[in-house]
Amino acid sequence: MLKPGFEKQVNLEECRRIDEKEVASPARIRAKVRYDYRGKARPSRFFFGGKSSEEMAVELREQQAALWRNVPVKGIYVEDIIMGDLYTVYDEETDSDVTFAPMELEMMADSLFNLVRFAVRDEFRRIKIMEPLRVGLTVQDMEQVFFEVHEQAKTQIQQKTKRYHD
Image (cartoon, rainbow, N blue to C red; front, side):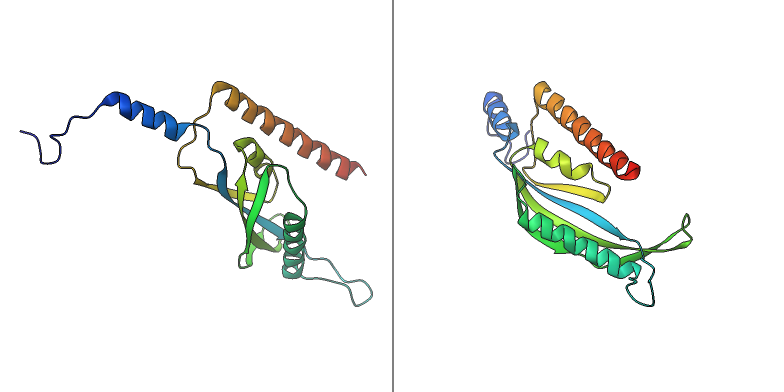
């Protein structure tokens, strides 16, 4: 004997068609990306001009927030920028306290490939995909995502080596 509510016949073909529609590539992806900007204290020169670790972290976060607000990125629309509370961590390498200033970006992306550039940054901490709940990727889509990760990582390495050599 079936439990109440299970006497209705289910057509499996309809279920498969619905799943394929749900998993099809979405028009846009809503995501929340978190960055933690590290503040390095700057010593003072001639009794003025020095900044604490907290001040440097806040200043760096404000600069980056201004860039995200004002510089358009192809395939990305930044909906909101959320500033978090500062937190301090002891760094054993430098034997000092380091302050971090968190910032979360709520955004809409045209595709998964556009989100890759956000994940390869040093400040990156977390990404949360809010919509859609499921994403179907073909083999070609996966290849493009991996290629994009490779390209973005290579670009980051080139920028860092150029910065250290100059």
